[in-house]
Figure 1 (cartoon, one colour):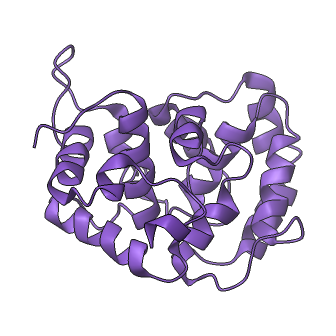
Figure 2 (cartoon, helix red, strand yellow; figure 1 turned 45 degrees about the vertical axis):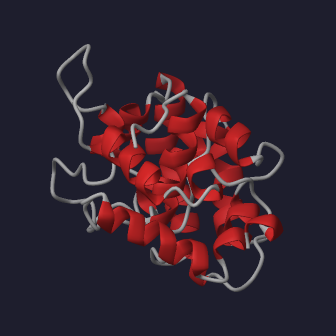
Length: 216
């Protein structure tokens, strides 16, 4: 399977090192940083819902979403926030509705194209001042965490998806084998169900890109 995938798997997945993958996940999600004594803010991303309205607002971009992406080290600039929550809000929310409810990316049978609703949503977000590829992916992932994989330069480099990310990741997951393995690693790491399979993949890639080496 590995040789046929359209992405380059993180080393622990390529080598079949499930114990190492579990260690990486526990390092990211459960172990406090030595410098601060606190968890990484990214570890809080998946379940962060201070207002309790996340499910209710699944089809609405809100100020809380703009705060949420700061947990992943990006910040929407003031002018971008003005458009996201102001004059562009209704159109973005309409595109979000068109995407449909959250569901696993591995269950999407058809390739994504520029005409796909989620692709059109990304395009609309990236047209807003200060919202680039990385920030758009995190905003969409906030609303559709099981469907839309987070992208940044580190993840793109490690997975070999800098030219294109969404469709190669979908192709890698579509036969179900990798998806099931990622969920099994989540269980073995003792993580919450709120963390979807595509998030497990991006964390493994990101931690590798940041130079973390599993202890096991």
